[in-house]
Image (tube, rainbow, N blue to C red; front, side):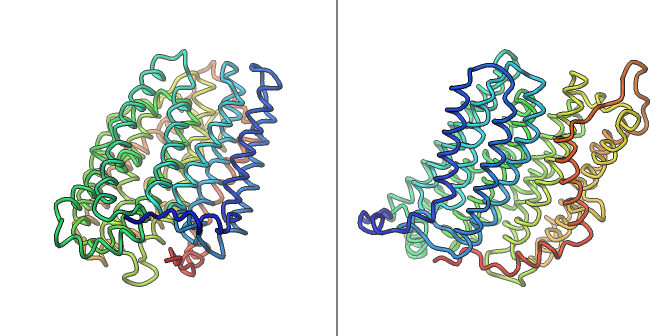
Length: 497
C-alpha cells in the first residue's frame, strides 16, 4: 500500500506555505494566555481588537504565500482556490468578532479570552480544510472546526436553549463526522492511499469493478458534509443550535462554517469523484432542490428571528448547491464555472448575512427578545439601521441592484445553460417565497410604530462601521459585479495537480 504522507518528501517540503496557519495558531494561543494572565472575568475589548488584527495579519500572509501555489508532500496545498476561500473565511470571522465585541460588552458572564481563542481555532480548522489534499488532513481540520464550534454554541451555559442546542449539535455533529470517516475508509480500502489526487487517478478503473462500494462512499460523505452545510435532510440541528447559541456564534455558523463546508465539498467531490460526476450529480441536484423548498417553506412559519435566519440559511445552502449539481468543473465558459459562481455568491452571502446579523445582535440585545417584533418601529428608533437591514434582506431575497440578485442570476442562468431547467425553476420559486418572510421583518420596521417607552437606538461606532462596510459591499457588487467576477475568472482554480 502507498501513503500520501511520504516521510522524506515531508521533511524536504516548503513548510513556509503553512505560515498563515502557524501564525494564526500561535496568536490564538497568545490571546488565550493573555486572558489567563489578566484574570478570568471582566471586560477585555483589547482581546477582540487583537483577534481582528490577528485575522488581518493572517489574511495578508495568505495573499503572499498562497498566490504562487505549491504543496507540502501533496497533503496540504496552496492554490487560487485555497487563497480565495481563506480570504473569505478570514474576513468573515473578522466581522463576526467585531459583532462579538458588542455582544460580549452586553454579556459580561461570557469568558472573553476563551471565546476569542475558540473563534480563532475554528478559523484555523476551516483554513486547514480548504487546503487539504489528503483525507487525513481534511478530517483533522474538520474536527478542529467542529469541536471549536460545539464549544462556542454552548457559551450561554446558564441558558436551557443553549445547552439543549449544543447537546444536539455535539451528538449529531459526531454522527456526521462518523459518516464522513466511514465513507473515507471505503476509499482507503480500495486504493491504499489517502491522497485525493491519487484516489481520483485510481477511481476510474476501480469503478467498473466496485461501483457499489464507491457509491456508498459518495453517499456517506455527502451525508456528513450535508450536515456541515445544513442541507436537507441533514439540517434538523440548525434551528435549535442557531436559536440557543450567542447571536455572533449563530452568524459564524450560518456563514463561515457553511462556506468552509462548501469549499471542502468542491475540493473532495470535484477532484476525488470528478471522474464519476455523472453518477452523483443527480443526487446532489435532488438535495439542492429539497433544501431550497424546505428552507423557504418552513421559514414562512418562523417568528423567532434567529430560527428564521436558520431556515433562510438552509435555503441559501440549496442555492449554492445548484451550480455544483449542474456544471462539472472545467466545462462551459468561465462565466459559468461553478467555482466562480460559488465564490462570488459566497462573498455576497458573507456581506449581506453578517450585516444582517450585526443589526439582529443590536436589536435583540437592546430589546431582550428575539421575536421579529423586536424590529417594530426600527425606522423611528434608528433610520440608518432600518435602511441597512432592508438592503440586506432585499439582497438575501434576490432583488435587483444588490449583490444577492447578481449572485442568484449567475447561478440561475448557469443552471439553465447546464440543462437543469427544473432546478432553475425551483430556485426561482424558492426566491419568490423568500420575499414573504424577509418582508415580514421590513413590515415590522417601517409599518409598525415603536412603543412609547422605546427610546432612540444608540449604535456603537464599531458596530455601525461593520454595517456600513457590509452595506457598501452589498450595493457595490450589485451595481458593479465585474469588480470581483473578472478577478475570479482570471484565476486558475486547483492548478496544483
